[in-house]
Length: 249
Image (cartoon, rainbow, N blue to C red):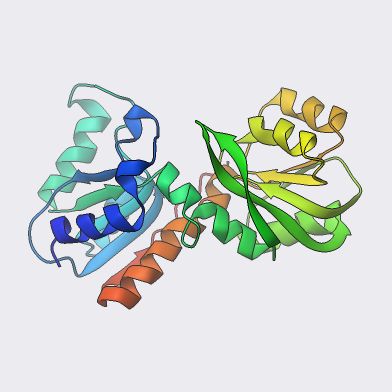
């Protein structure tokens, strides 16, 4: 398949045209190339380091969660020029999916995290931009400390735990979605899991009687790109390789 055929398939798979997002997200095909796609590099972030690794690994295309155009309109100069130039020189294409990848019910970041902790009785949760992008459900009852330790081990990430007690009902939204902790509190959930947050979220969690777990923005958003890669490999026989470049945040 070439990148236009593959992009058309991904647009339909992830329902790109129907899902609203930040205008700068530019979901879908971001950089076109030519020729057959034999190998795809999967990454959370498009940055110079992941571009260089994808080229080193002989990828013809990258599939990422955070694409190249977050800064909006900007001149092709300095580091932005270097990224674009290196991709075009290497004939490396780019496809990005942000919110559409977060909320996909089977291949999404939130579904991957839900499966990781064994979340059952799944229901949509976490309103963002008029849609619910995460999940809530139940797990086998355990202490907050045990849940945090489980996340740390399975994600390979440092985890910040705020609050204590037993956990059975959980809401989760991957990435930087700590503002949703108030929704978890109002729905009476024992705990809320996301990637990262700010100082004031500590007080919101404590005062809202909801355990808050920060499991890493990067770490909580690796599941979606991996799941899409597995799907494409099975569907089309394309080699897909995860390019791990953690930020520690």
